[in-house]
Length: 140
Image 1 (cartoon, rainbow, N blue to C red):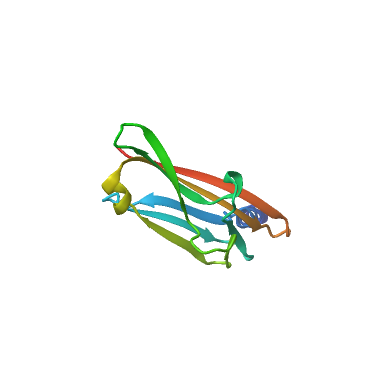
Image 2 (image 1 turned 135 degrees about the vertical axis):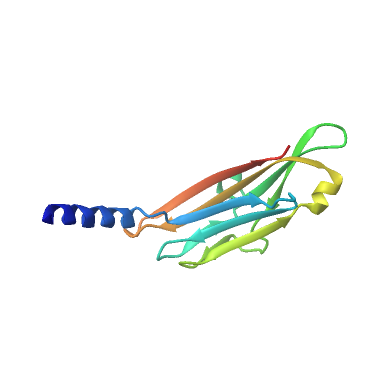
């Protein structure tokens, strides 16, 4: 019985150590008019969402559409609207940015959205970990 209790305690400690350091949400509402770009910091340290100037160091939303001439084209929407290169997210806090698609839908037929989250977080061992996550939403 003691052995079973010790195994259970060890398992719980391992699970808490490997808990997800962040939560990412890239979704669109039912009307397909508003996109939610959300990053939650689940660590005890600061997390930094990167604005960047180069594609591999940048957080953004790409809108793919069919133009009036029938060609597929795209453009990026900046998800960090201020001039800072980094958006710090405090422990337990959430960064939320909503994108209104109505102005874009009037002119174009949107076919796909791609959300890119580029950020750095700190492990309990003080090691900095860069992370890049891409999420895609297909439209009909």
